[in-house]
Image (cartoon, rainbow, N blue to C red):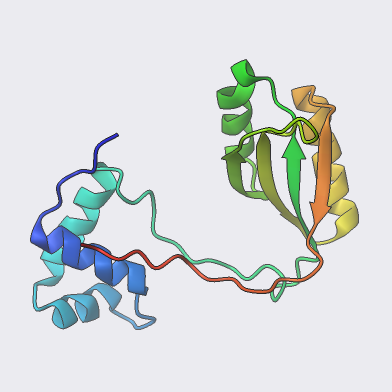
Length: 160
């Protein structure tokens, strides 16, 4: 997949979004003022970036551990290659799943599909994972509970 050409305004707005949306009453107005463009141009650029699939959505990231979610784990699943899309779609529709990834397997690690899962308690999380396993008929998985969060931040992309 080749990179998509961006207009200068789209590039400016994307860089501003990477820095973060200001927590003010009129964030896009503030962003526009900082960029030296109109709020309409900011909103048009965001719409264009969404249509071009450069960004998928705008939203807040909750620090689940501070919000009282004690059940947090990455689950490594062994998913047949021909079922990856189906399983990915299923998990992407579940509220308790924040991320899904496909990764390479190794001779001593057969798991190729990973979900980051969250629930109020470890017991609730285990129940949700067991239900997913039964519904999807995926019996080979490992639950890797979060022991301690060291760092949590969004990647900072440099626009060239």
